[in-house]
Length: 244
Image 1 (cartoon, rainbow, N blue to C red):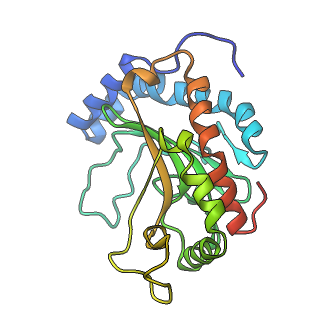
Image 2 (cartoon, rainbow, N blue to C red):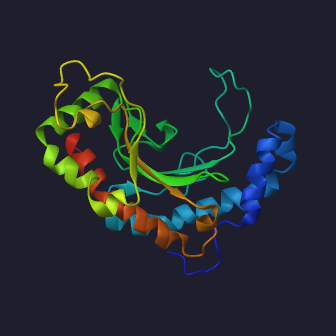
Image 3 (cartoon, rainbow, N blue to C red):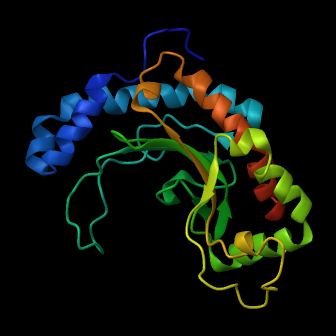
């Protein structure tokens, strides 16, 4: 890990993202690309590099890849092919720390990685003015993965509750994502964990203040958060027969 004490991000990082939101056009971005490189992309890649070794202490399966393309940092360009919103750029920064069994090139917006039809849990950092957060889990799993998660929950309710109801976890993180309006077919509507069985995403998140991202001790702060997610990620890996 780097011993440098200067912060990764600065107020200029947030100024750039706010300006991009006001001027989400290719011409503007190209004219300000060096600001993006200096204040967003390069510090994000440095942070990812500095997180690689600490994340191994949580699990040797977690990958923080500082590759400029296809690594942990998501592209700033939006995929507008199937969207009515044709704005070309994201106005946030996303970083995903993914399971070694997956490929970084096939991740969803919360960092869910897939190799073929394999889903695996990840940790995630989201940087956006006024809406920064960290989190992790499995976002939008494939139907067969979702069934495995639900069946494992039925068979292992105590370990799920231990992973997600612990006071240290719930003080910081909140389970979220999409849920079904009705119990999934084939599952007991009266089950004690029916709220969890209705989940379509198995994720948790915790807000961060903009000022948190400007701290020189950002790696330490993130590792404190990520350590709290370790039991949940371990449980998710166990449900999918993945090493953790």
